[in-house]
Every structure is written in C-alpha cells, then in structure tokens.
Image: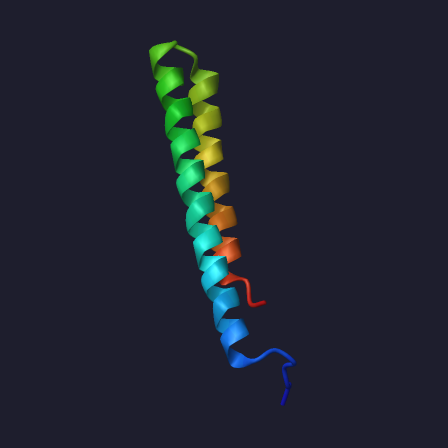
Length: 71
C-alpha cells in the first residue's frame, strides 16, 4: 500500500486541474486548427490547411495525455 503525503483534497484538486488544462489545450488547438483550415481554403494554400489539421490532432492528443495523467 502506497501512502501519500498529500491530503485527499489536494489530489482531487490536481485531477480537476489536469482536466481543465486538457480542455484548454483542446479548445485552443481546435481554434488555431480551424483558423488554419479557413486560411488554407480562402487563400488556396493547401499547406496551411494541412498545418491546421495537424495542429488539431496534436492538441487533441496532448489534451487526452494531460487528462489521463495520474499525478
């Protein structure tokens, strides 16, 4: 059995903080990705659209990783 030096309330706050950080990462990534796709479509620059899609995928992956973090 592993004992923790932190009280139970601190651990719960940490998990809530991770969830908020994950939601923030995902929402910022989606906004930047959507802007990149929009610029790529309006300016006829397929590279910008691809960068927007890659940014959205990366932000989603980082958000999931942050949300699943144990500590």
